[in-house]
Image 1 (cartoon, rainbow, N blue to C red):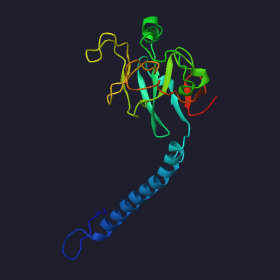
Image 2: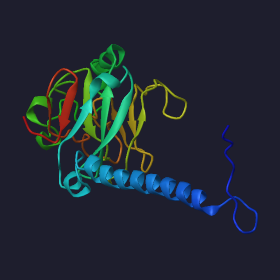
Image 3: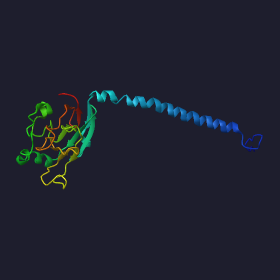
Length: 207
């Protein structure tokens, strides 16, 4: 009958040869894993636009199916924020009220440089349910805040929902149209974009 015994060193402690072997095996495994990760990171990054490409105007794709009705997401294009808003039926109805138009400086988007031709309409969009606009105030370049609620205490009973610039109190509706009597001179700018399919929009590509 064979009985295995642990080998001991000169000081009576367990031998270091097997311990060293286990340490080297573990270390090799860890280093190998780090090497694979180091190779994988540049490979994954190669799928994404570089910082230079993004700042230079590389198109940005957005999956609209992930944006709930009434919600907005912000993406970056040419180092600027772009708002993508999924407008509800109620939001659209508020935009089309004649009394609302009377409060706007440029309700029919007469300044042609503010939007592509296909967005020069009542909703300033290719599809009325999705509004895409550069989130930079046309006064001094601040970023307006998204205020979709109707008649909040700080904006007054006539506020229909829209964008409020916290820097100098400019106001825009849910089509990015500027209100009268505020510092901003023109509507928010609509960037060029196109639909690749029903759910994917590409911002930064002219039709």
